[in-house]
Length: 149
Image (cartoon, rainbow, N blue to C red; front, side, top):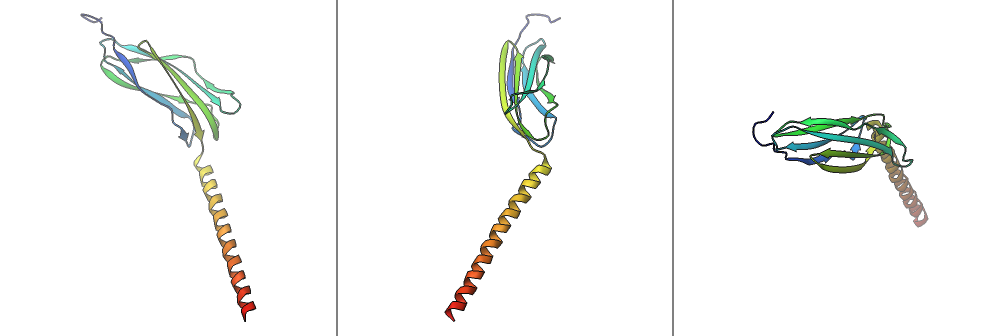
């Protein structure tokens, strides 16, 4: 019990959903501030959909996180059961202090090994083109020299 007047003053400072990750599970979060003198509860609902088929990959039941008075609290939650490679649309709804905040982000999930394969493929293709052009130039110069003599 609080002596005196009850003061409720809370706000959502920041929401966080990354746009690129190299591994799952995905961490989403929010920075919450409570400047009042009583604790407030923040309610989160997080969903993840496949970007192309709109199939629900993850959906949680709404859960509450208590934020103590005169604090700034970072609430972080894991989004599980996502594919190891792909594009996913993640949305987060936060009800806190009588306000609702909705944030949504398209997330690219790309493992490190896949990034190396892409870089290796680009390098091999580039090197093949460079050596092909050099070989053609040498053949042309050699042919031109033979014709001139």
